[in-house]
Length: 127
Image (cartoon, rainbow, N blue to C red; front, top):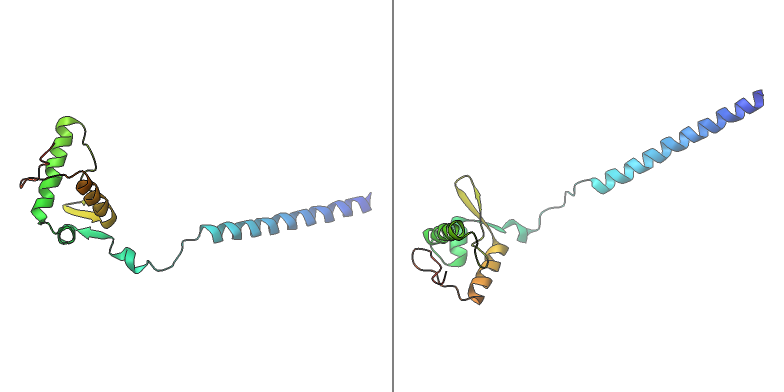
């Protein structure tokens, strides 16, 4: 019986070491996969967000005209409950407007495709 107990203890020890080693390997694998990449942001991504002034320069529009378009589109959406096509894309953080270059490109392409005409007060002439 003593020999059998000794063999059981050795097997338990081997099993415990195997579990610990397996846990260590699995933990290391998950840590490697979930670590945040510290690679530098590509230079072209750094200029992807514009302020109102930068967006106005990019689109060759005046800042107040962009603000008028945004306000008029919001009024139209509020009054009718819908808006046909893509609204002028922006994010407002506090009092500051921010614009994605890609979204501005998409908006200008759609507006040109649909031949939108905006009046001086920012209203879409055909809505």
